[in-house]
Length: 319
Ligand code: SF4
Ligand code: SF4
Image 1 (cartoon, protein in one colour):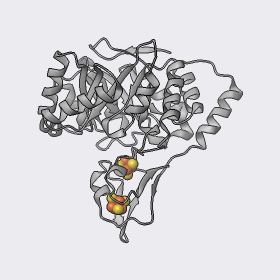
Image 2: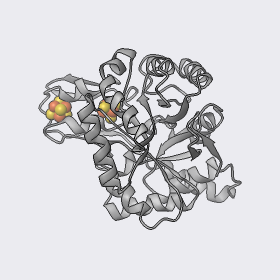
Image 3: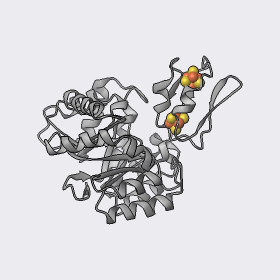
Image 4: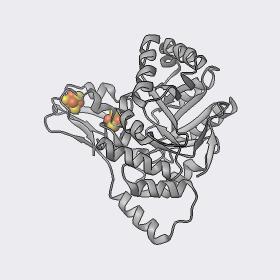
């Protein structure tokens, strides 16, 4: 599989990154063995880059998948830590639960503006110390906004930007895919390491998967793109696509059919009390309360599953 280098960090990653959100408790909730086997299957196909977050609850899957491996796997994770102490706890937790002495890429999660990054700066300062101490190899932010990419571009301490980009701009809350592309190009000029997320718009672009994956694959400033996968068919399809391999037409057709059948959506249980916590949590502004219960505007939903984590009634799940 083709590889890219994350900016000036020297970290070499496969152009297909396994986005592990989809296998964990916020989405499919696969048993650990099954999820770990799927990651291992992808690694055997040439994927060397795994993306996770403290929120996703997927450290046990990754740890098991990497056990006994004799090749290097790059792990990127992130947390919402606000203070230096919170970030120290996040880094320690990641090292402990992933069974690693250091984390390759550690990011601040969902940094949508310059003011948010400023507010989390004590956590970033801890990451800088952790980098000096060899606990973290590179640091940065993840963001769903053009403003987040632009703000991070101007901060010399930031090595990596993990940003949302797809063909139709689905989930970019402050602009279009064109705006995001311009911000990505500028960030690359500042030597930032870039990797994308939500190439398939959280599942909305599955019916146009070839066009959507080709779009991100041909953004030269992206070293890699994280794609969520839940089945071997998805791994096969994405690995073939990102390797630019000629897949026999019949096999490709079968794989595409299997993947199309896996169209995902946000499921809301009928016992929702309409408390509104999930509405506040959703930065895509896809949720609203009407008639005493929450409703989703599917055209705005990124299918990230983050809302599920704040619901006291366990009403929300990506299925
Ligand atoms: S947090 Fe849960 S109970 Fe509250 S509005 Fe959202 S889905 Fe309903
Ligand atoms: S509604 Fe939930 S799954 Fe959809 S974008 Fe908002 S937080 Fe993510």
